[in-house]
Length: 190
Image (cartoon, rainbow, N blue to C red; front, side):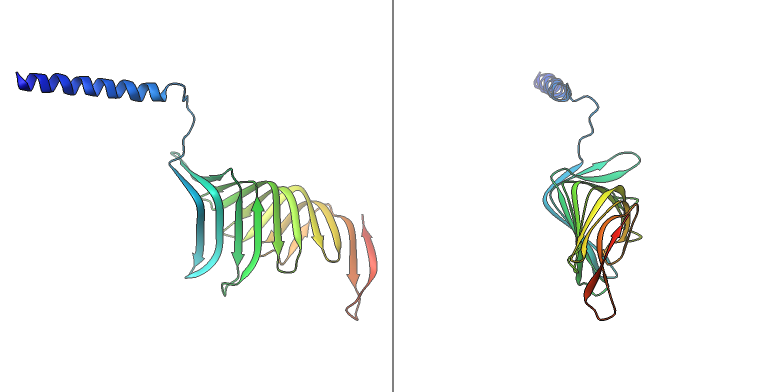
């Protein structure tokens, strides 16, 4: 008799728990939920023991699907880049970021800024960082503020330390340095 009561209680508990799970999942639809959420996250990337970059975000949601794994940073992000000696070289910020783990590609969106040690600042609404090739690319409109003027364009390719870059469809005002190291000539670009 005791065994029968335990069996009946176990079955009732099992059915009530499975009903609770079903009710909790109702209305959830097919929305993908994060496998992990990290608050005040810092992810450090290194090569042969030397830090190459650090990624900061107030919240990172890690999603895993059958075919991919990615990090979503809807609360903003900041990435710092370092040279081969581990010295800081540049900083990338945005209001939203998505990092594809397998392909090591990051998409920055909404009020994206990129600055280097020379004091140059890039402003755009979207860019892509290819971590394996250390390349940053965008097809969106860009604005670069430099001590020698402001440059506008549509599209850009840059190194992740932002020491060199190529702007597409460039416009703006730029000062050209002559031989005696003073800024004297002013050129307008179409």
